[in-house]
Length: 117
Image 1 (tube, rainbow, N blue to C red):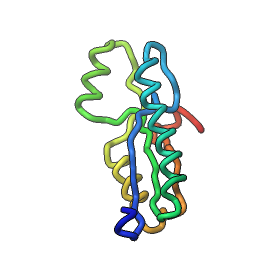
Image 2 (cartoon, rainbow, N blue to C red):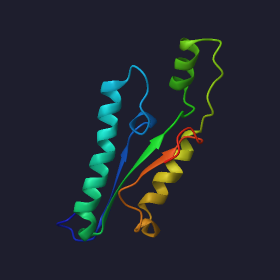
Image 3 (tube, rainbow, N blue to C red):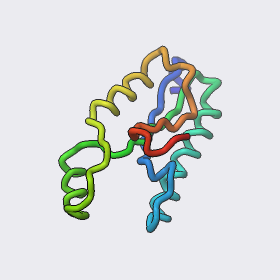
């Protein structure tokens, strides 16, 4: 992107556990928190080249795999608020648009209000 000289967008993904630690997830949380640090550092390094770097942090996304995992955990749990995958797609589509040139270094929560920054 730097060599091409036209700017660009880098978009990463880090689940909610990268913003809010959970019990028994120390190693996993640490790795996901690192994505936020990488996003912020890369955004600062690449800003002079008009390259933005952001990450989205989804909560529960309604997919067949997620539904089966919740069913496996316990039939007594109330399913969490969930989003359809197109919610994530819409955010990513926005982040690649020219209008998003001023959004960089962010880890954007898409979690139905589970975690506030």
